Length: 204
Image (cartoon, rainbow, N blue to C red; front, side, top):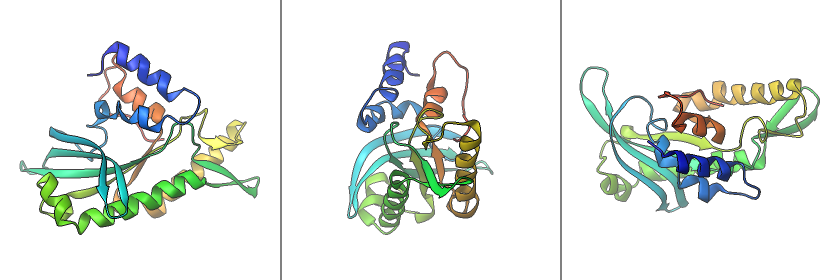
């Protein structure tokens, strides 16, 4: 569990000016269980910036997961990180529609390439001792900060609902088929808050 002092520093880093992606990433191991797809029996490795052909994968969690029928499986979950100061959505030239920002699209594209590379990489599977490609998973993206940095130019509750609708469409038609998730940094903070007795938190 994160200490109260480290948690205060994490909160300050999330809300600091500039882009603090790398500084925030240093605290993300405290949320490792959240960044898997179930109940981890054991967290083996949490790694920042694992190199691949397409660049550096931002964050990988390797864990033994409790199986539904009693068997346990070792899995790797690949995540892409963007700064909490970067919004997810922006206006789309229509007062009733929002679209992903370049930052979110960039994160999606990076994550897909890193995941594809990991599936075909003997080096990746040997490095993490995961030979079954089915156990290499897309985790998702951590970006932005709800509600202050969520949708660029959104100044009303109605605009925020429109931005959330855009996210829900991407979840339904794109993300759900591969198990991909999107978290904002405030959800990470909520999950690791030492004053709360929480195991999981909702997505953005």
